[in-house]
Image 1 (cartoon, helix red, strand yellow):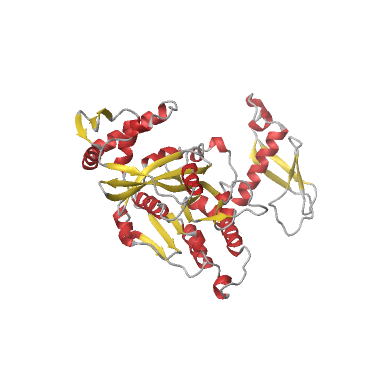
Image 2: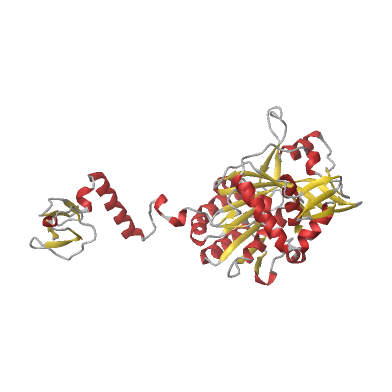
Length: 431
């Protein structure tokens, strides 16, 4: 049986009265030129006959539930499907799709397996700590996804090395590169790329190098108060919505500055701050603090650096976890070294004595021999990675082992960097 609604008032807030259930329904979408007589309108909702012996869903609803459903229907009609939804009833919102960072240990520390899509990520740290290298690894991993992801690199510092990118694994023929003239141009093209919905990763290197037009047109020494901070705040307000629709990972590389405290220097001396104001800190779902903690030597030759990444902010998993890995000069993250270190920690690679290790029913002399074996046998390395992933996700937290058990006696060693002051050393260790 249909609901018959009679028009009671012909105004901008006309009300329809159902002659069957005596409900009042606001008239929203009915537009006519003139009404001279009362009109009968058929209600869109269908009502089952009372003789069927079953009650309708509306009869079982409370007035509060019915009002909520009507509000949701009105929002959907006005703004489209997906404008509002039940969070727990949508399967698409249960798991966050990710892009790997290229580091196995960092993916595990992030808790979700990589950087979340449709979010803002900030990577910051001192000079030569591996920020750009990590961002290039993210691009390389995104390009390996099914269908071949498109990525863009906004080189505001004008310092990208294509040779380094290719050695890391980036397909430069499918990498969009822009070297903008101003901050407005850089952020505008980032917005255009994200709105296209076709780019998986956009890297901006770096926030500190984004110079507003006003500053470019001015003279050296002119005072410009918070131009960059206001520009970043405005851009992030616009980009956050576009990112959620396009599922693009937006990575901002940032530099650090020392903020000297006034009024006697404050407590603890200078503090480190990032460029571009505070807006990026709020809009970023993940913030990574990357620092170099040592040099990797093979004999007398320095072949790389040991870095640690602290997850300062994480909206998708517990924050403040850390990950350590090696960066080989000209090659990037050494994945076999990560697998070796985690394998020793979780007893999958056993130290039999001295510099000898037992793995895969074979004996190896030194860390380099195990790394070479894992690099040569990708299937074995994949099996070790899967086993490590299973162990780390299932076993409870463990107490840190002694440092002597984690380091080997091979010719390769980790050397702490030289520091000029106690403050520098405290900053490196405390990060």
